[in-house]
Structure formats: C-alpha cells, structure tokens
Image 1 (cartoon, protein in one colour):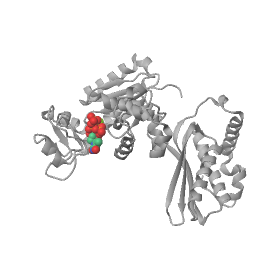
Image 2 (cartoon, rainbow, N blue to C red):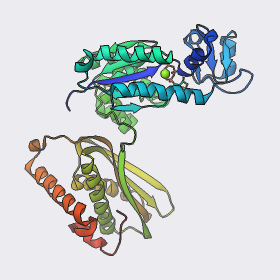
Image 3 (cartoon, protein in one colour):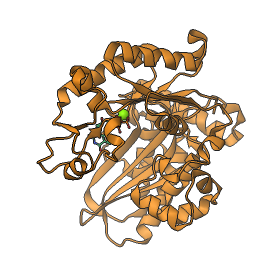
Image 4 (cartoon, protein in one colour):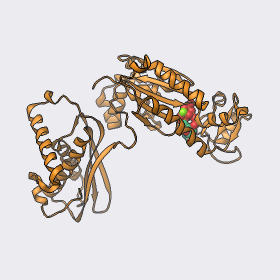
Length: 394
Ligand code: TTP
Ligand code: MG
C-alpha cells in the first residue's frame, strides 16, 4: 500500500471544556459533567484539574465526590455538545474532505500529500488546533502517523493540548515502550489474557508470535499483533461510505442440500463482488451468516492477507466457512448470507497478479458490464443454474 499520512484529532475533556467556554467561572477548576453527586450515576468526563485527584470517565459520582469534594458537578447538556461537535467537524472539513468522525469529539483525517498546501503536515495540524481554539475556545490533541492506530495512540499520548508526529519507519519504536493497555482494541478482558502471557508493553506484544496471540484471542489477536507492530491498513472512511457489503436470502423451506446452499452462495457472491468492484474496493474479510431451523444465527469470518474482489475468491472463502459450520451443526438452514468488510482501495497493480487471476478479473468485468446494461439475470453463471426457479432481490 502506498504511504499515507493520517491525522487523529481528539478534543480535550470535551463536555467539561464546553461548559467552561460557556461559563468562564468554571475555568481552571475541578469540574465534572455527569450529574449531581447525590444521585447514582457516573462521571461522563472530568476536567484535567479534577483528573489530578484521580477522577475519570466511568467513575461512580459518589466516588468522585469522596476523592475531590471541592469539584463542581454539572448535569450537562447534550444539545450544546452536539452543536460544538458540528462546528468542530466543519473546521476539520475545511482541511480535508477525507474525514471520518468517531463520536462527537474525535476524527481521523487522511491528509496524504497535503503538506504542499501547508508547508508541512505539522504546520497544517497547528493551524487546525489554532482555529479550534480561536473559534470554539476548545483545545485539541493531535497525532500524525502513517496509519490510524499509531495516529490514535500518538494523540492520546500528547494530551492535553498536544501534538505528536511519528515519522514513517518509526512506528514500532514509538509504540514499543508503551503499556499494552494504550493500544486501541485492548479492553479489560483482553488485557487480562495478555498480562497472563507475561506481556506488559506494546513491544512485548509485537514480539509474540502471531499464531500464539491468535490461539489465545482469535482473530482479534491477529489484529492486535499487527497494531502492536504499527501495521494498520484500515482506510479513513467518510460517513456514508459502505463499511461492508452483503447479501442474504431466507428459504421458503429449510434445507441442508449442499449444492443448493452453494449455488445460493455463488449468486450472492456475484452480487457482492459486483458491488465491490463498482466501488473500486477490495475486501480483506469475508463473513458467512447462517440461521438454523431453531432461529439460532451464527456468523463466521475469515480475514484474508490480500484484498479480493473477484466473485470466485469471495465464494471460495464462503464455501469453506460453510463446510466448517455444517460439520458441527446438524440442523437445517433457514437463511444463508455472505458479506465482505475491511474494505481497502482496489490496487491498480493488476499486472502483478498471476495470469489466472487476471483472467478472472477480466471475466468479472465483462459480466459486470453486460449485467449493467441488461440486468442481473441476463447472464446465469454455472453454479447458479440450480437456482433457476428462485428469484432473488437485486
Ligand atoms: P473522550 O474523548 O474519551 O474524553 P474527553 O474528551 O472528555 O477527554 P480527553 O479526550 O481529553 O481524554 O470522550 C469525549 C466525550 O464523550 C467526553 O467529554 C464525555 C463523553 N464520554 C462519556 O459520556 N462517557 C465516557 O465513558 C467517555 C469515555 C466519554
Ligand atoms: Mg476527547
């Protein structure tokens, strides 16, 4: 994948800071948004002055008042926060159209190549911070790196009012000494497992064999291993851009007929593949969904090393997942579906593929173009013949 530059930006103590902007008397004081301390409830956020007393998001208010009796407790007003959030996102939008908001006060921006406009990405980030401060009165922290996970860790580490830029090639060295809980994706349960393996730093995690993490944590383990090594090819996805594409069908009658299930899967794979190619994307994850006669619904996913966009590749992963699922389940199937996710830009290096893959790609393109002109049913491909009496939604 070509080198990218990603910014992660997150406002400091967001809810509290908005309250402090609207009521300057609160500035410089320990302030908590979350509710009155005489009620049950938790801290939504605490000002940095209150954090110095050990207060943090999620802490019961009764604990917060015990640790910091002089704190000022505010109920909060979500409408106000949403309005500040919209103004924050509007400022970011002026810097890059490639922006993925995460909640109200945080976003990723793809700013690859934007240094020419601003001198450097760091200067660009400084301008963003300055405008947010001038126009909203809020402070933001920024991480700049070659991928999302490193940018996110960098902005967290820089808080408050900070900026950390991790140079390309320095990702691993940057992450390595940090405690493993700083890595996004490491929640409470995962942390227990990882510490049980004697690992305490992100560097320690990066040196574990990937298969060992997989055996303890499943596919999440593989992802964390990549993250710990500073590898993360997740794209910055503006809202509205599909994060997954899928098709599913419920049968009139439950079945375990393997060739019928596979034929259905094939037709679904063709539709998913066509959507994927239309968007110019490839998928790095294929998910099979099954609902059994008793309505129990399962999904089984496979993560792929390379992005795929051919019908065949999607189908083959799906069939393999189907075989495994049916091997351990005796019930008949009511619903089958297939989806793809973890979408990446389609690489334009088709010439590097094996000739047989190239042929497949060309075949898919030819079929796509006939179907675009004459409708999906204009062509029936081999496996789908078994389905001739069944009509599908497009
Ligand atoms: P965060 O960005 O996680 O926290 P923050 O902005 O308050 O502080 P900082 O980024 O400087 O560490 O969350 C943004 C807002 O979301 C936060 O102001 C309040 C709200 N929130 C909750 O309501 N409950 C929570 O558990 C968390 C973590 C946040
Ligand atoms: Mg924040």
